[in-house]
Amino acid sequence: MFVLSPNQVQRFYRGGAKIARFRALDVAGDGPEDWVASTTTVAGEPQAGLTRLPDGRLLADAIDQDPAWFLGPAHLAAYGADSSLLVKLLDAGERLPVHCHPGRAYSRAHLGCAHGKTEAWIVLAADGADPCVYLGFAEAVPAGVLAGWVAQQDVAALLGSLHKLPVAPGDSVLVPAGTPHAIGPGVFLTELQEPTDLSILLEWQGFVGDGAQDGTLGLGYDRVLGAVDRTPWDTQRLAAVRRSAAATGTGSSVTALLPSAADSFFRADWLRPGDGLRLDAGYAVWIVAGGRGTLRTEHGGALELHQGMTVLVAYGDGPASLTGAAEVIRCRPPAPG
Ligand SMILES: [Zn+2]
Image (cartoon, rainbow, N blue to C red; front, side):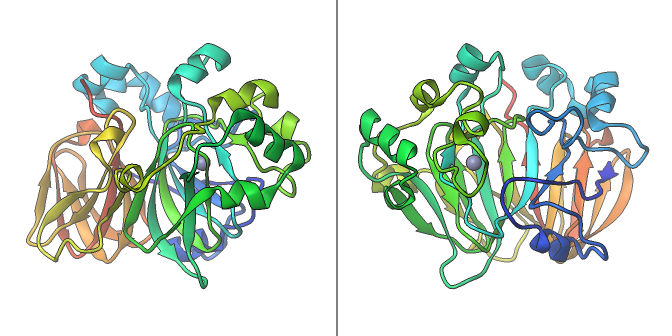
């Protein structure tokens, strides 16, 4: 297993102070996102975004060299030598623009890429008067109306058309590809996603220089708006993508943070050690959300955990145990098979 260093990345929005606070960094890095266990590069960049292991190797190269040790036989059979997962710490220092991401079918057809960017959020902290996220159109939006809002950069209409959801620490939301969304200011979260950096900016003014150039995946708005889910989200549909880990008691527990619809993209659990947890071997990214504890693995030794640590556990580390009082978000790749 590997303790991962901060890997902050510059984006087109402000933020980053909460990453420094969460990780108790003496010297704050630059950028509102920390890409954890990343084998993904920032769009258009040769290296930015990639995680380097403590021994100096890029994680992507290390997995290439020994995929069976990192990922295990079942993952390898299902997905090949691809972790299929990107985890981030994301500090929305300001409201993010209204945007969405392409799905797998769209990426394959138009971008020559096997992955889309379905994502999920697990809220670590939320401050300000009204911590919230925005997700899904409340009413169906005709294609021409959406194109007009985007062309005019009618932010009031774009934002006002979405559901506004209040959030608190421990809340999680699955964001299927295509769903328009935004994250409110003051929200700090762990994000799981497919390993790409593909965004479609419906709102771009004030964030990037030219939306058509920087926010359409090179396709232009006429084509790329076809990837947007313009269907309405009712109460039932919203409830199906939201969970909370807040009320699961104090005993040993592994609480699934995402609905089963997420399983083919990624999995996330909230771990509470209680009297001690035993966990099967497998590739996992651990975010220590709070408290202190000890992670032991059969072949990788023991590690003292404290808030802000990010740890990559490989399949080859073997079965693991967690003791103490650490609260851990365990992020895993899609379920094999
Ligand atoms: Zn997004």
